[in-house]
Length: 302
Image 1 (cartoon, rainbow, N blue to C red):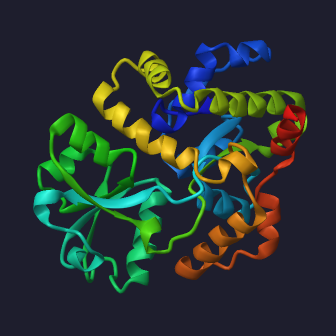
Image 2 (image 1 turned 90 degrees about the vertical axis):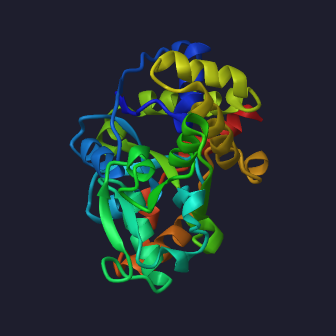
Image 3 (image 1 turned 180 degrees about the horizontal axis):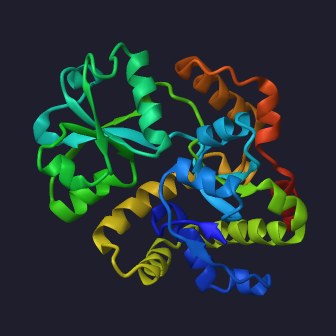
């Protein structure tokens, strides 16, 4: 059982399923729709699910809290968090957000990341701008309930542009030196210890799915739409292009899909401690992720 809501970040998995990748490994997959890293972390910790898609900084926080969670691979090696607004609102810089109402995603690591980011740049929550509880619906920004919204780059902006024909301005946290890992795939550690062969097969299936999805944009899009008929084609087409650029970055050819490094996790820890005031020690980093299956998969390919 894994936690995923069909979307651009996991389209590769559904393509792999449709291509028989997991069947060939003897795995039958069941997925439980859920959104928000805090929701996924709790479900993983309680062993309600075996695997989950979760923000990497939230994996660190969860490990610090002694949740039995471990990252097995990382999809985004940059933060996908953005603050976006309608182009007509003319919000193009951080200073333009002063005095504005900003929608903050609930139960998501994105909101906490954005609040810390804005504070680092001199804008304090509910003093220099108003933080508004948000479910992430584009209607909140289209209706003027908020002036700008925190979201992931492959969600809100594509929906606004593809479905509603409105142009947007996007402030990307990564463009301001936020050098942290984005999304990872994590496992319940107790499940891992009890079922190492199943976990290995699942990770190998994910990596194979990532590899065969590369350069197959149209086919992957069709698989995604098949698994959720309510998704909008134009929106997912645009969102998937954005996602592919994050997953298949300039290090994938040398390090392999899903790669993780100690240095990358350390950068994530340093940022998290610096902006949040947390005191997560370096020892936690080594306990947060496991590259053994990535290494084994890549060795078998040689």
